[in-house]
Length: 96
Image (cartoon, rainbow, N blue to C red; front, side, top):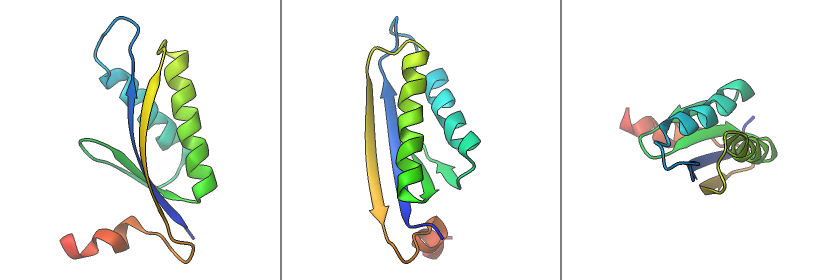
């Protein structure tokens, strides 16, 4: 059972000022490879799972940005921690 929802907006400083979209795509690929439920929105991506695992995914995302040449990265993170069951579907079901 998931105990957290974590939303992240990752903003890498690109080496030559190029578009960040390929970098963001690489960050989302890290989430996808982790196998956790996630939803991409225009300004951030929300993941669902165990808080410790989700924070580890964020670390991997930042490390990947460095591998791609980013000198610095801003990661804006929001966390909903609910030990008895955190769910994207439950939180947004009234809007569907």
